[in-house]
Length: 126
Image 1 (cartoon, helix red, strand yellow):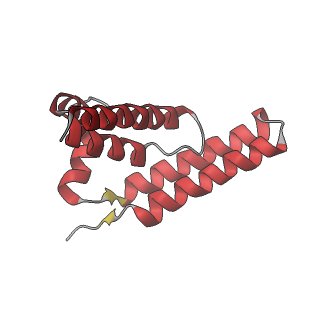
Image 2: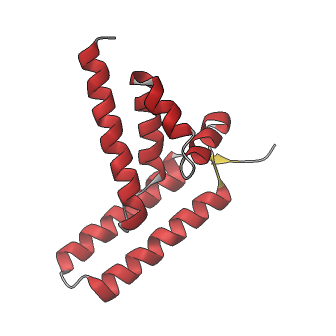
């Protein structure tokens, strides 16, 4: 792998990580898929960044769990989706006055829900 390609993957990983962190605060923006994408990109490009991410005190456990089981527990999915929709509701009802931005936030929430619940597999105990 060339150095330029690795640098490109690192930049994409940092952007993905940033979007994942923003997803904690911005309703409708999913956190988990962006963190998983960051882990994948860092795994391909930077061992140091990958190790930092999987050992991160807040995000590392989710990524390690996903690596082991290739899925996310149902409880985590329910919690993440519920919290996301509560924040979307609060934002669109109380804080956002522009109908276009309301629609964008709701569309992002629908996209996040689809990704979280139908694209990322759910862990089932065997």
